[in-house]
Image 1: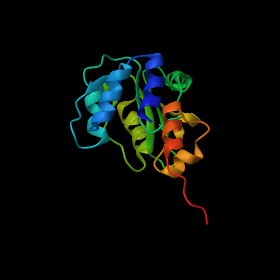
Image 2: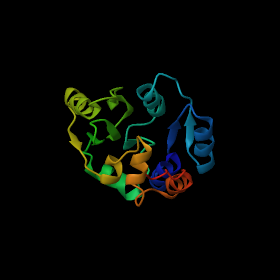
Image 3: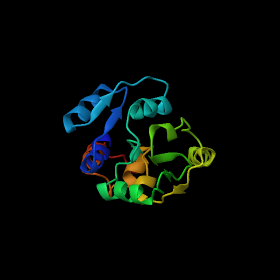
Image 4: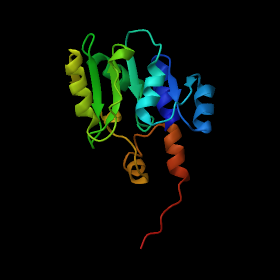
Length: 172
């Protein structure tokens, strides 16, 4: 899935990857992304590390579990972002799959259950306009093998390959 997300991201700009997984680090380097050391502690600290030192401007934060994403989805997220504001893509479970922020200082470590609502409140507290962007390929994340099967026709090529290699379950 990471490879499919990176393919979309690198088609429109540069990418930074934070992962504790050596295979993920290798893949990121092979496709031209910058690997940032994982500080540990989960997704929030990882994203903070990834955005540290980036100059203000259009910054996209995209989870690795959205393997249907294509470059036009990322362009749509950028286009939906209010000038100087924040756009976020909420997963069906209320978590956040992607963010568009104007500067690293606009990010807060708010991931987890109902994080989309917390990101929206955070933007309000900062005095920034925020929008929820309903971009299907960013809304649909993969948390289970069933999610992979449900999305199979829209998956990127690397995720398609993984799905094809999964063992077929016995049917009653």
